[in-house]
Structures are given as C-alpha cells and as structure tokens.
Image (cartoon, rainbow, N blue to C red; front, side, top):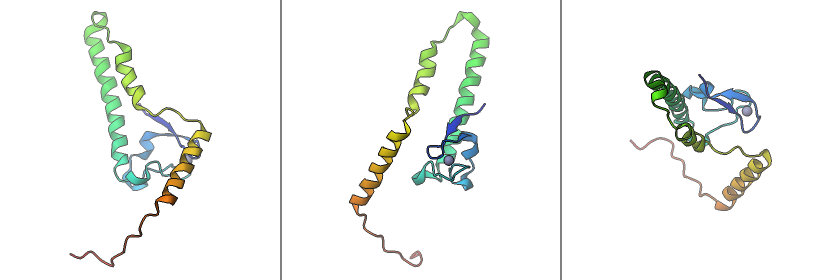
Length: 123
Ligand SMILES: [Zn+2]
C-alpha cells in the first residue's frame, strides 16, 4: 500500500515512501524541489507516520469487518471524510504560481535583519 503524490514544481508523480529518508531532505527525486523547506528534518518522519497510520487504519477496518460482517456497517463517510478533508485541495497551477509570487513579495517587503554570524559556539 502506498500514498501517491505529485510534485508541485515538475508535476511528476511520486510516492510518499520515496521521501521518508531524512538524508534526502524531503525533496522531489526528479527535480529537487523542496516540499517542506522549513521542515526538511521532520517532514520525512511525519510522512512515514502518515503511511503507517493509513496502513493501520486499513488493517483495523478489515479486521473489524471480518469480525462483524453485516451485523455492523460503519458509516463510510465518517471514516473517509476526515481523511479527505485533511488533504489540501488541489490547486490549479496558475493559482499556485500567484500564491508563490505573493509569498516572495511578502519576504521582500519584510526586510529581515541579517543575523550576525559568530565563528563558533560560545560553549
Ligand atoms: Zn519535481
């Protein structure tokens, strides 16, 4: 079982399982696009958790179904909808580009103060 994905930059299809090695930096294996620029060290673990949770949910539902049969019918929408709602809505490429442009514009107007660099930690 795998979770499919699509790169927001090159639009190539990939699997979430291709991104769970922390040394790979949570980047597109085709074009190198950083999927979680500020979270590259933690995102692989979160991705792995999502895959494990999906597998656990599917396994538990199948197990429960084999125990109950027709005697218990789970409400499909209450199982599937929370998962579907947790996924970001697919955006059209044009909208994504505009959003990206605004992000850069915000960064340009913010004028972050440069951090003084120290040669070595004080301790
Ligand atoms: Zn890509």
